[in-house]
Length: 171
Image (cartoon, rainbow, N blue to C red):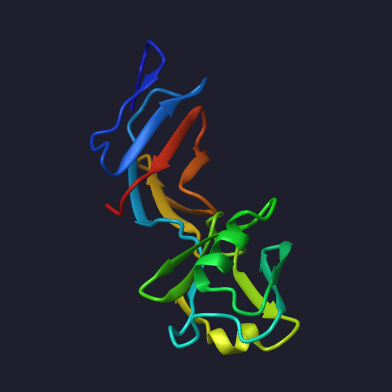
């Protein structure tokens, strides 16, 4: 709700944060968070722990992609460091339990990861999809019926005019 002084408050800041931006009408709104936006994630099979031959990985997210050269003998840690060190990389790379994990930086259903290579490295790594990219889903009810919405991230600027919502947990 908005007080006459131009502020907004949330009854549960652990689930929805609010910020008054300007011009919000006074009132109360029921905000329901159905799901949060998620980034795409893939992990390797854990059986390949180093590159058998020189290769080049191409990793894409949405409309952007990077090429990462890989030398014969490069370990997963080296490959992850090279991915993270590539300018404008669209993913975070890490090694967890001898598996190369690629996590998208951007959330939202259009930000899916694609992985390929010029040789057999991508196939040898045997990537499996562990988390599917998704938009956040929410509804807002001001008393006249709920309106549902989706956002590629967890910040909603067009749900309530003059108020920014930060979705932090399902309600």
